[in-house]
Image (cartoon, rainbow, N blue to C red; front, side, top):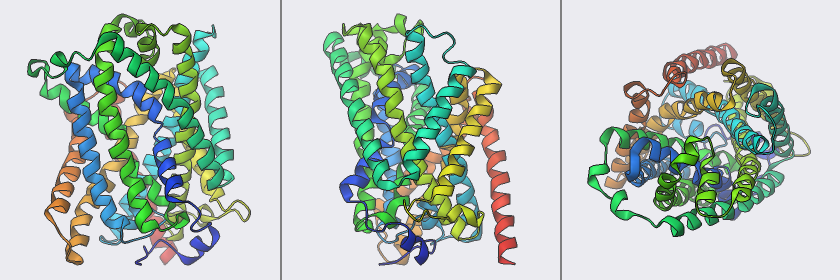
Amino acid sequence: MPMSSTSQPHIEQQLETSRLSRRSLVSLSLASFIPAVGMGMLPVLMLSLAGPTAWLSATVAAVLVICIGRSVITFARRYVGTGSLYSYIQEVFGSWARYLTAAALMVSFVAQVGGVAATVGIFGGSFLEGRGVNDALGPVVQTVLLVAAIVVAGVVAYRGVDTSVRVAVTLAAVSVPLMAVITVASALHTGLDLGQQFDAQQFSIGGALKGVAAGAAWLVGFESCAAMAAETKNPTRNVPMAVMSVPVVLGTTYVVTTILQVPGLLAAEGRLSAGTSAPAALAEQAGLGSAVGAATDLVLAVASFAALIGFTNYGSRIAMAISEDGLLPAWVGAVHPRFHSPHRAVVALLILGFATIFALLLSTGDIVKAYSMIAPLVVYGCVAPYVLVSVGSVLVSRRVRELSPTVVVAATIGGAGMIWVYLNGWINPPAPPTDVTVWVAIVVLAVMTAFIGLRHRRSAA
């Protein structure tokens, strides 16, 4: 079985190899994307961008990410590496691609940790405001919520992968049924109104393309579970399944959820305009009562910890693999002797994620605005690695004489689609202050790439 060059023997000896079963890995992969939050927030976002035909944008976004997934598993079936895309890309490209990918993944994971912590704060703040707490979305209350989220997730991730899987999967399992009940109740109350949802006159190309970009943003990072390959039983079989579970299972779920919720969201326009969260508005619209809506905010806040735990585990292991290659400081690759976790990388990642979202919170004065600025960085950080892995899948397949039309088509759609997602930020910029992230991403990525390249050259000298 081929091994990625970043899977150094002593990494695998320190981590608990063959620890995760296929079920555990797939469950952690799905839980990390907080399905309940996606079910609660993605349909209303897609509706605001693409109009009543939002289901089409959701479908195209799912297909786009599935195509990228097809390119990723071309590598995952052949190589085992704790660096995920970083491990795969260096099997094909030279040093420049290693530097760029390492920098992009670190930027994306820092933003992901900060963004998910902000999600905890948003839902937690919404719940507290409903209980009479003033300015719960402002800096003071949000700082407390962010610190609490970071500390709790850090303790869980620090204690190792078994604890992380149990906590993350439990939180996700508790939250999904509530959103499913609200979604079905809304559909039964309003009907599906398929005539409007499938009406070509309601379709807008510009809105649909914005919707595709937004929908893809909810699925990027889906391949991160590949970072757990060294700790997984039969990784060349289990990792591809876990990788594809997110775009296939959640992509399909979000399409169905969008179709079911759009009529209810249109009917609840007044409540949404008044600032009620989409899940709460749907619950009230369907006659479930305001108490259910308030409970939903609390449940989704707690469920968001699942994503924070998951991405902390993924990001810390990728950082560890990059450190092993000398691209990050050596201390980042340390593994805890008892818990077998990359504990220093866990702490560093959480501190950087907190510092980023905290700085944005202070500058904007509102957690929702802060989140709107950090979320695009997650997506933009994934563009270069996804394009490279799409091209790389074709090169690897040709190298082993297994190149097929499926590989070429998936690579073309996935790579071109991710380039469009970035260009869309220039062509159809969001409202200020989020519009600045499209060029901030380039600056941050360039600085990080230069830092990694210089560090590696010095360490090799």
